Length: 190
Image 1 (cartoon, rainbow, N blue to C red):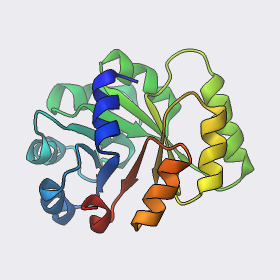
Image 2: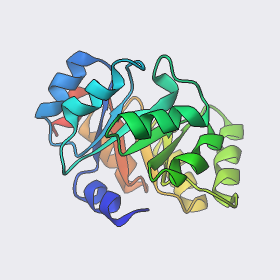
Image 3: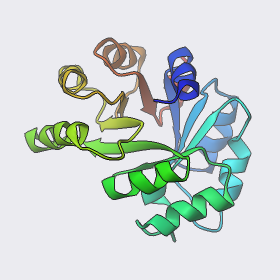
């Protein structure tokens, strides 16, 4: 993982995951230095990123959730050329290589709903070629599962989804996650 990203996450492990304009306004007041943008469309994403972009933070756009952008490499080109986003989130492994070629940070998102998902994460960590900078595991309120993943993957883990209080945050971090992401405003201000 890039040293700048590592230092920012180490000093402030709570990632604000922003799902609408109301969240965006609240996020600006938080201490979160890494912000995940989970909404928008091809016409608004530049302005959304611009509203929260500061020199000392990292903005990542969930490319799969931006209306009007496809799950193809050209969508990454669009984000790189038309916004000041620092990186992307995606559930699509095939986008990671091109995003890295463009100099974007990458987060590969996994929904852990069964043992097959765990096998897929393990396979991902053993793949050759472009690896994501981080893996986000959802839901993030599974400490034993997070520990198991961190024991099998060399890629840093973000715990996301359903994290609502300090106990959830501490459980994820103490079981190997390098950070947590949450849409919960209370978590942003812990």
